[in-house]
Image (tube, rainbow, N blue to C red; front, side):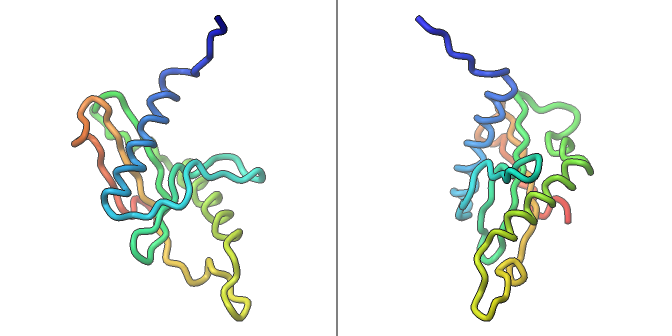
Length: 134
């Protein structure tokens, strides 16, 4: 019998957190258009990309097995924010043009959200921070 490597426990809980965040956003009425979006030209990925009304949201998901003294969202530091902004800009550049040759990205309202997922206290352990950084 061949054994399958499943990766570190943190990767498994991270995947679980992203899946929970996906369904949480859908419950809130978001339309999720991409999961784990990346481009070959840049390092990093955006966990979830979703529309809330007319706003395109780039969502970073942070998962912890238990709530600690510091919230999971604090893991989104300045370096992580810069990476997310670069990858989000790449996503926007690949959107189709609007009539008249206007880039779609120029007419879309965007924001960056963070979802903290605490696996020990579900379902209440999911927290959405809208407009977490600019």
